[in-house]
Length: 404
Image 1 (cartoon, one colour):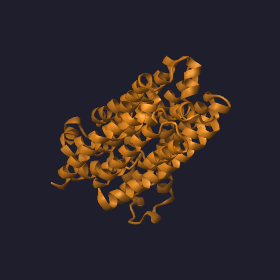
Image 2 (cartoon, rainbow, N blue to C red):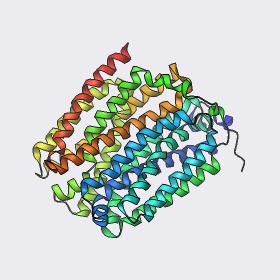
Image 3 (tube, helix red, strand yellow):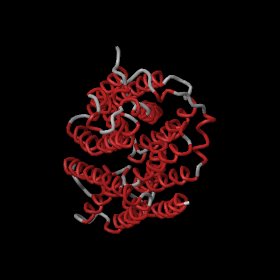
Image 4 (cartoon, rainbow, N blue to C red):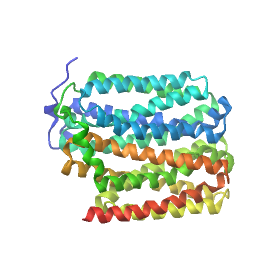
């Protein structure tokens, strides 16, 4: 199948993009949404999985933490070691493995099989996102990279808004397997369209060796940005990794009430993305000095109010507004640093946000599982608040490094 010449899509205004370019950007945005659904679906169906496989809620957290660990380790490793391969070959390979992992999730007959499927999905998700990002200059032009990347990450966040509550409702009313089937069908449709319609060659096909890319990882701005994600995202996921049982078991909500709360929480996360972009435009990394301070105080308040309603619900929704503020300022720092000093490592730079974010998720959910198994669900806010402190300190250091 032939594809239009990508060079025809390099006009200076986004509204003058060709229909083909817009469709490709739409597909890449759909990819971001699909990847988000595959990752966040577990959060919405934790109680049903625990019951189906006779494991504890803390054990179901492994499905998130191990997913995130594999994601975090393999995403940069694959970016470093596959630079000599054709971009199309990588796209097809990652799409096949991604669909296979989601298919195995549907067929899982044991907790171990479901965990293996999650590890496969996590192993290729970050690499697929990074490879997909490299098509943006070819289909939309270099001047639209930031705009298109923001759409992909926004779609990833929207998946949190839609997938978590919808899948929770489906699992509670019918069967959690139906939620898995829907996610699998979406992955097959999106990946088939990507393979069929994205350009087969392009300007970003130039090979890059690990030696070309490794200097990026030694830059202090990159190291500080990854550390910000580790503690900042980790502090939230001590609580958020177990939000469904928190709402139902600790706050006493019904399945329908919990689904409505998750939908509202997702809407707060959309606001968080808008704040992230606005803050980065006006204040850069300094935005995070405020957001982490507020986040820490809210997590502390979550512990202080306990199960008292409606105060606990108000704090939960307010936390959603802080959840994604970290993303855009750090992504901007990663991509700007790479473009200025390490142009051959743009793919690796694009992988650092999802990699770092998932390291934070793995850290937070693992700590949250220990809190639930130990002092109890009521202490996830207190422990999360403690991790906001190093996030705030590292952000202050990163601001000083960037100013230099």
